[in-house]
Amino acid sequence: MNVILLGPPGAGKGTQAKILEDKLGYKQLSTGDMLRSAIVAGSDIGVKAKAIMDRGDLVSDDVIIGIVSERLDKPDVIKGVVFDGFPRTPAQADALDKMLASKGQKLNAVIEMKVDDEALVSRIVGRYSCATCGQGYHDELAKPKVAGVCDVCSGTVFNRRPDDNEKTVRDRLGVYNRQTAPLVAYYHRKGNLHVIDGMAEIAKVTSAMTSILNQVKG
Ligand code: AMP
Image (tube, rainbow, N blue to C red; front, side, top):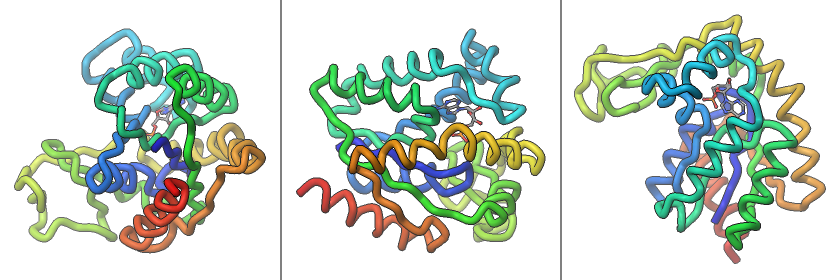
C-alpha cells in the first residue's frame, strides 16, 4: 500500500503518517525529517539544504528524488509507504511514478487534507516536540499533562523547528499554493485523489484515512 498525504505545512500530515505507521505498519517517509537528519549529521545534502529550508523554499528536485529513491531501496518499506511532504512538485510526482513502476509497485491513493490557511499559521507557530522521542505538542492545543515534561518519555527538553516562525510559515504556504497545489489536479486526472477534512479532530482524520485505505485495498 503506497499512499501520499497531500496538504500544506501544518495540515497534520506528519501526525497522521506516524499514526498510520503505528497502526498499519506502512512506513512514514517524510522528506522534511530526512533533510533535518541530514542537517544534524552535517552531510553535504544537509549543509546545502539548511539555508533553503530556513527561508521556506523547496530543496531541488534532484536532491529530493535521490534521497527518496535510496530510501525506497531499503527492505523495511516492503509493506508500503505513507509519503509525507513528498512529492511537492510535478517533477517529483513523475519521478515517484517511475520509481514505483520500476519496483513493480503502484500508488494506491492520494489523500488531500483540506485545511484553512489562517488556522494553519497558529497551528504551526505554536508547535514543538520532545527532543528525546519526537512526540508533538502545541502551546495552546496540545500541552503536556505536566508542564515541561513529555507525556510519553518524561523528557524535559523540547525543540521548535527554525522554520516554524510566522514569516517563514507564510512563505511556505505561498510555496505550497504555487508549486505543490497543482498536484491536486494531477492526481485527480489520474483518478486516485481522495479529499478529507483536515480540520477535524486527529482521531476523526485518522478514521477517514483508514476507511479510504480499506476501500482502495479492496
Ligand atoms: P516539511 O517537514 O515537510 O514541512 O519540510 C520542511 C522543509 O524541507 C520544506 O519547507 C522544504 O524546504 C524542505 N522539503 C521537504 N520535503 C521537500 C520536498 N519533497 N521537495 C523540496 N523540498 C522539501
